[in-house]
Length: 590
Image 1: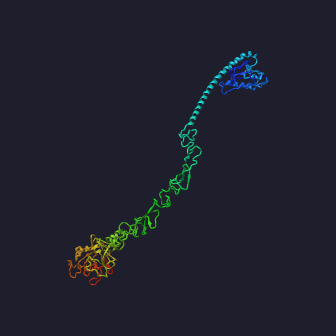
Image 2: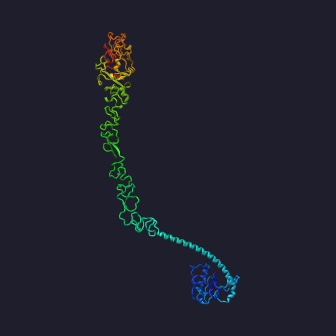
Image 3: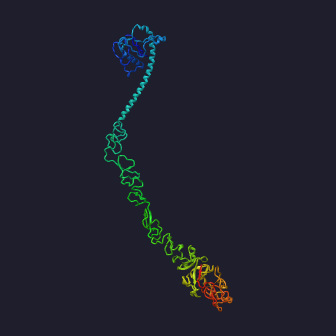
């Protein structure tokens, strides 16, 4: 059998015959029967032929290369073996187009000329061949148009690609000679064309970068900075913890000449304020020197717990002999301080700025004398019966006895008539001269002529007689009695004073009134109140009216006065007044 070859849509029809035909395939341009045992060569890369033509050329070359050279060898390209039942065209009722080429010589596939077969078949198949050629030409035209369009698109893409490549190559060439950082080295040779500190040949600097482009950083340097740790971030580093590096490590500082003595505490460094907390904040080796929160302490020389404001020291803790307060007014006297009781000693004991002015010491001494006993009672809650100093007329202080309980208290003792003494006479009772001792016997106080009063009181310690309102409060007793005439008619002249309170009474009293300097009315016989009345026994000073031997009023008053309170009756019949003849009769003013 021969070799049946089916070629779809060839560009140039391959017709049988001895004549060479133009070879449409790239490479060798002709096929000739004189060329023996040659294989057709095609260069597809440079071809501009339509795709269909290239395929046909490839199939033809494959058919030729597969032929063995013997007449009985067969090869099929793109078809099935011939069948006894006929071709598909015959089965379909269509005359088949015989494109079978029978080769009996190996050199029939000479690339120069193709021998199509027996000339006798030409006439029989001419009509079919023409029809086939027309169909193939139509298909070929369509494929050619499509191929041309595809080729045009590919050409455009190729041109664009080539233009892009040319542009990129141009840019790369330009980039290779640029010097963006103006360091004198083009980008193609520079290791960082954006940093003028980096280029081949640059001096290596201690800056954490590769200056000379040798791939190493900060190499071969002699002076590398030393950094010291500042762990507490207070601005002062620890001299014992350091690192040498060209880059600034986080948390490290260069030496500033001053070192932290505790890098774990940001309140501790050379310029910190020293505090009184047993910590050396300013690194001077002392935990208290120069502390800004020191407390002032004051010397307490007399150890009374109060400091001298003129002797202060700033310290973190109290030194021996020092206290916190500065309230002492006399640091040499432990009885003088704000908590002391004011004494009548001329010193400002309680440190209130004035000596002997405290109510608690009023009357306690000549330096703190009161005006009278009533003054003491009114100003001192603790006033009790006893002796006090008074200075009623601000001339000289003296001591008096004060009764702070009887009939409301506040009484100043001005005189005492003792039963064992005879110092009281008509002369001494009206005199302004003081005499006697406060502690014993007959006694007349300076208060007799210095203390002003309103009320009078007499008492023997058992009973008392009070004559309130006897005076106006502006006169002393001496002035009071001096204003009353001697030997007056007590019951008629108005020089008598009614007892306002007291337990005085009894005996031969005609009444409890007090009379001053009365004449002897002899029981009413002396109705004219004559001072020189026969058997007259007139009185001087405070007197009470008693019956005597002639009855009331005022019979023999000489024996019923203050100065004769314990004297017996003239006729020896006993005592005329109810006072205790064995007790002192005390005379008070208030």
